[in-house]
Image (cartoon, rainbow, N blue to C red; front, top):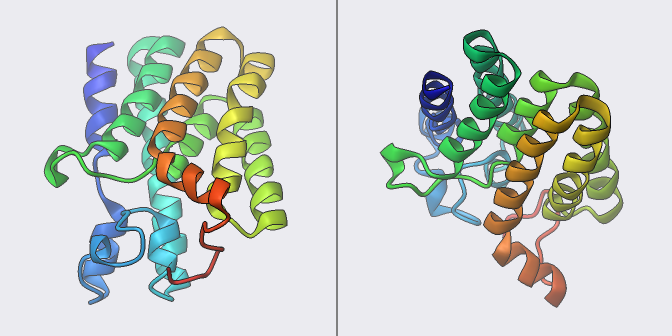
Length: 192
């Protein structure tokens, strides 16, 4: 279990958004938009390909942590690995514990732990984000739905992982929630 947690954290702490934008010559992603290292902020650079790559790589590290954790310690190890990867993305050691918001990494963990749960959660995000054109609204709705979906589809252990990840995502979106309530949250594709 400890191995699953350590590997999960180290995988999750890889800041793909920062690495990709620097490699593309765009500088430090933390200096633009929301200052976040995730795909939504990378999209604010106008580089859709980089944003898509960030999304996929952030999801892949969550999935890899679940698969490695499962290999090391079964379903409980998978759940610990997925949660640890999300924590690593949120609080990466090499960025002074200032990371992203965990949506893609958490979704990747869910997809690997229970593909039907992950697909249903992604569908919630797509529907809400598509209707509102607000990424954080989709993320918050998907996070809220994920523990229920996971519990019904995959059972208690994955349901608890989804609940812990959802609580972390909601906590990291506190500023977004305030802006949503005020009607000032940026739309998808906006630069602000």
